[in-house]
Length: 129
Image (cartoon, rainbow, N blue to C red; front, side):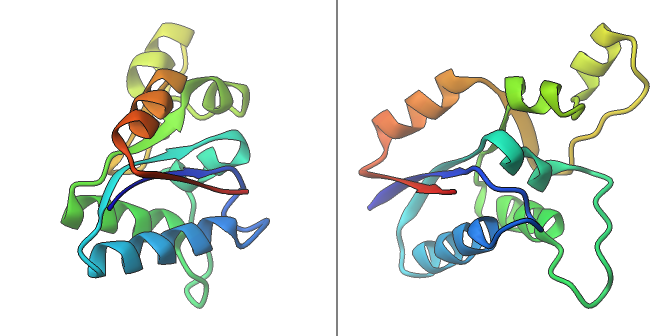
């Protein structure tokens, strides 16, 4: 089965992102495919390069990055949600006259078109809010 996933909640404000991560792990371990994980609303904070939780807490950003690298999963942050919250990729930062590239490894910026495309290619679409 092919899954498209949407994560709406910030990593440390709710359990939605952690539940999504565990679901993706389980789906992959069971031989399923994850077409794309789309981070929307406050979910975009999962892709923040500078997130540094305490050592005894789950590092959502690092785990998503590692999962994307090992399984070639497309992790997409909504451009509108990211810009509103000040999270910019290198190209957008340069365009806005900013200094930093805020994206963690394995994440990219995209639009709602990437979300729609993922749902068209997936058998199931799950939202973790």
